[in-house]
Amino acid sequence: MPRYFIQLAYNGANYNGWQIQENTPNTIQEVLQSKLSLVFSETIDIVGCGRTDTGVHAKDYMAHFDSTKHNLHLPESNSVYKLNKILPQDIAIKSIKLVTDNANARFDAIERSYEYYLHQSKNPFLNDQSLYVFGTIDFDEMNKAASYLLTVTDFTSFSKVNTQTYTNNCTVSYAQWHCINEYEYVFKITANRFLRNMVRAIVGTLLDVGKHKISFDEFKTIIEQKNRSEAGMSVPAHALYLTNILYPEHLFND
Image (cartoon, rainbow, N blue to C red; front, side, top):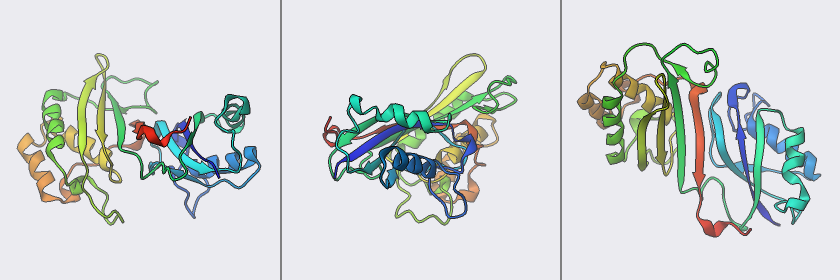
């Protein structure tokens, strides 16, 4: 049975995250799975590259599924068009790719990237996309602290407590704040894996550095303590975006 990777983007504002949950049908996975099954006239189960929390968005998300059909990745199948026609406006399919039979969207990902947006001038058009932060922020000091993340392996201080992960070790390869314009900024971070709530906790703690509530040395101490309660508050979900997933080239057959 052929296996496919499906590439999509979604606005997570109206959903309780990616992963199917017993107490709510309102998840990206549930909606996508039902529409795939309807369009392809068979029961489709999908596995995502990871779970995004309630309200978090994805500019580039990958999932895999198996199908009895052998042509879903071909342009003449019109699979992407058919799915986009019946999916809600806040979920968009970008591509469907044929992959090797054992390819796994979650476990084969070798790199993930997130972006977190903030703005410092009141803007009604950014309310649902970016975090408004008033006051002076020292972005140079925040970038100094962000660079330190590349030397860290244990991110327990930025992880949700009582999770079922086998390890809190991650390898961060990039972490920096960038100026978009005079009033808008974005934090970009790339790692081989992320813990639940990790990016939002990091951003909240970096903002404490930027507002001079804590020093760079105190930021380092927080990481060394491996205690979530010592780190800063988690920033809101609406300004967080999953932006890229990287896989080995040998997984793709088309």
